Image (spheres, rainbow, N blue to C red):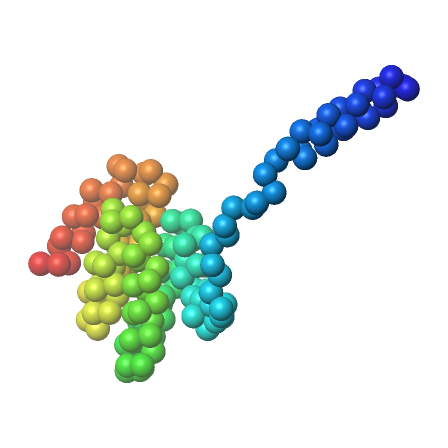
Length: 148
């Protein structure tokens, strides 16, 4: 045990001798801004959306579709516009294959077919996530029929 302690002590001494030969000048640090970024400028919702999985984003869009339909039924334009913006923020983080922009357009359509189209886009998104590709052609066919 004493040999181990002696070896450690010698190693420490060698390191100290070597470390003393390091240059004492430290590299220039990048200049820091005088003022830190205000917390109001940090977009926590955007950060939250970025950390979500695609499944969580689809679930959020599904929830927001319900809010949009509620706003349309109640003719609440402020809620509709605010919810549409939130949907766009979520949809832009999703891959294009989920057709987020089409979902938003369908959800904000005040006609009954808009509600059904939004439902089909959400269903299609979950089928893609679950890799149930055999079910997608039927959903695509239903979407095309409603769009005509």
